[in-house]
Length: 181
Image (tube, rainbow, N blue to C red; front, side, top):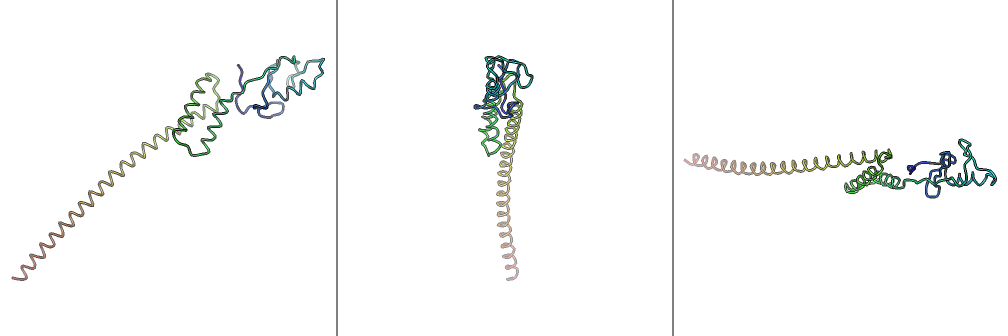
């Protein structure tokens, strides 16, 4: 089965293929939208066969075949575009990456380049997110350790201040006893 990727357009009218503009193949192998093909067939005399607008070979009216548009690829590309435009959870990105990877596996040798690139970019996003998450956890751990050390240092400082206060009191009482003698 021959399938056109998303973004393909008719070489006659240059409009993008879609549900309302299906691609059709004629006997010589050239492809055009159903509207252009119908126009060519409709403007040709019923007594002659229509001819290809590219190579001018004549083709039987009943030899026209509709080509499948790979809508799954288009849907996934649209989802990638939406993910790129908004802030998404890591779960949404991971789910989309899995869907694209599954589509690429099922495509075999006919992998759309846009999906291969999208899968690579989403994988990079996931790897970077994991690295960022691990770095954030390490950062939070270091902050907790430092806060604990600050609390210990503040306690040590309080203890030292109390000790200094006792020594000052002792010195003052010793001085007072010398002055009274």
